[in-house]
Length: 136
Image 1 (spheres, rainbow, N blue to C red):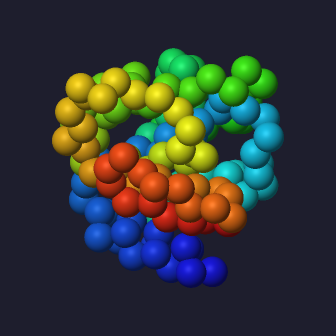
Image 2 (cartoon, rainbow, N blue to C red):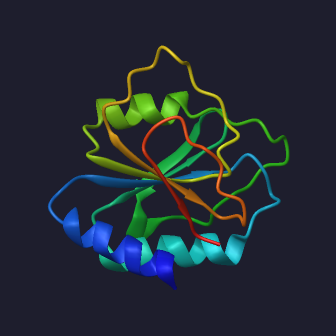
């Protein structure tokens, strides 16, 4: 219940900002019910936000209220680079990323977007930048 309160506060604070929720779809070994609940929560709290489905590349970007079913893959390869570049190009103010933080990105990449790593696991890894939030 703690993470819900934290997310609620963060989304309220960013009500007038451009927000996106990205989902790492590189593995089907995920807590799909939890992830679907987070997507629904974002859709209710910030219906203008965008949903990005990505693994080693962006698979789909859609308004969160019109989001299709999330498709997971089994290859386990994820890269955050394309999502961060997309967020920069689209002037996203805050990017929330549901992931286990095992993906790759170019170290030279300059990320100006505010990033929140939503980790659906019992272990909270160290993140390269931004803030990690355990949502398990």
